[in-house]
Image: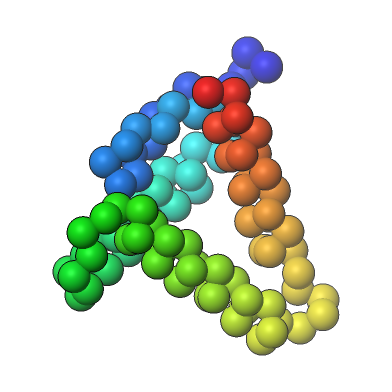
Length: 98
């Protein structure tokens, strides 16, 4: 477990300290940046005052995209979705530690 990196990701003005495997760091940082960009876009386009509302809209947007990808994919190409699920599971485990 000593090979885990301690990183901090900021999402919606909150800092989330995580312990992650080195190979996960880049994708988690890219994901956090994408979420931040989506939050800014939603705040710009909608009169939303509460960050929780913006986060819910962001989560809904990504979940809808994932569902759309599921319906469009061929039966042989389920690997990307499995990887996303693994990443979500790892994030949840690390967040539960804090």
